[in-house]
Image (tube, rainbow, N blue to C red; front, side, top):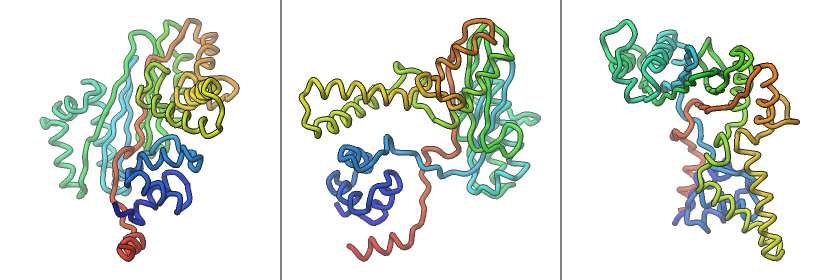
Amino acid sequence: MSISAAMVKELRELTGAGMMDCKTALTETNGNMEEAVDWLRKKGISKADKKAGRTAAEGLIGVDSGLREAVVVEVNSETDFVARNEQFQDLVRNIAKVALAFGGDQQKVEHEKYPGNEKTVAEVVKDAVGTIGENISFRRSAKLSVQQGVVATYVHNAVTDGLGKLGVLVAVETTGNADAANAIARQVAMHVAATSPLALNVDELDPSAIEREKAIFSDQARQSGKPENIIEKMVEGRLRKFYEEVVLLKQAFVLNPDVTVEQALKDAEKEIGAPAKIAGYVRFALGEGIEKEVSDFAAEVAATVKK
């Protein structure tokens, strides 16, 4: 398989490894980007722990909340300029209101009536394409609710109240003081915005992600030449470190790194006046997981010359 300059550039951006190392990794893995990332990690050349989704789409993340419930939605546009358009901002706000009323299922929300309108959300979004002049899409939504407790919201890089580039919901179940519970839940939401954990606890981690890490750690450990029983302990230690990096409850709390998130919540129970637990969280970053074609003329020319 021909390895293009654009592929090498992408792997460099993902891992920070040198150009020749990236080219070798891609050659060894027949151009498979994810396997190339792992190949570099096994060689100790890259510290990347996962392939990051490149933020590509523009638009806004919106949140709305009610009594013991909250929603987060993502509505995309072609340019960042549209995110500053009041008509577009109203669209996102109203879609969030519908999602709060009818649940977080995006397809269901699309077919509900838009506020103050006989048309559905999907129809109003389609109309907005014509009036705003850009392709607009209601991409996703999610809702959290609790029987007892609070659901806090946090918007990072807010352009106005409840709208921004990144939105987080954190649900805390408790029978204690709602204001105190909301205070710690909002702090945890800020933490989630900053750290982007993969799961609430170890049990919720994707088993394939754990196996992938085990394989990489085992390969790295074997290169040390140590016996298998020592390697096994080394891998266990690396896995514990991995959990501390990606599992919310085990992460060092951003606002007080001396304690974990789990311990910070436990400490907050004094103010709350009752036991409290995180029932769930949602983190939406604008455009994550959407690839956008970026024209790199120099890379294209270089790739053409090498063929």
